[in-house]
Length: 194
Image 1 (spheres, rainbow, N blue to C red):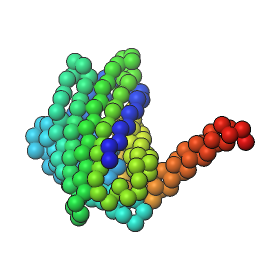
Image 2: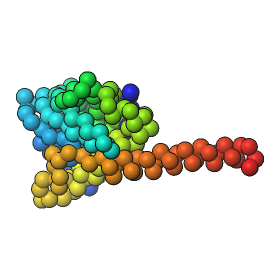
Image 3: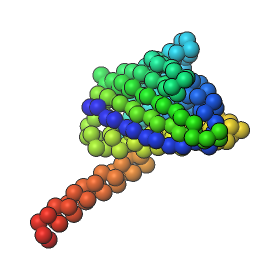
Image 4: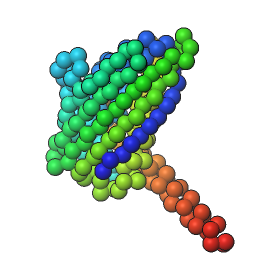
């Protein structure tokens, strides 16, 4: 099941600091919920684990990420990551493209597009739920990135490398799914003249 997530946000940090952050696998992995960097193979290839728990299901993935494109002049980083479930036949693949642009000397705009393809146990929750959980995780990542860049003295992100507890994520995703359903029902009522 393929999912696309797009996000644009501004960081109160100069472009050079944002660029350095994007190329630092330890800092990026520290902000990725449930992720743990296990090995830096070379300056563009990394190994790691991601663990997600949604309800009663825990999915652990081990895999590798590779910086396929790094263009400092264009402010572009493209990362491709893939992994396999540690237990089970599931897999995940993600292509993440980040573009940065200086808004001012002290502010940088970051535009991120992620194409994620997940196969396995997590998919039994359905596309909408998985998409909502993915968006929640991405929002947590963005908040951490902003906090790390805007407060460089803050140190390591809280909870870096800890497994994601998906119960609150699943609850928020369920609320979001229910909200979409209610919105569709209301639109149907208006069309029927009720």
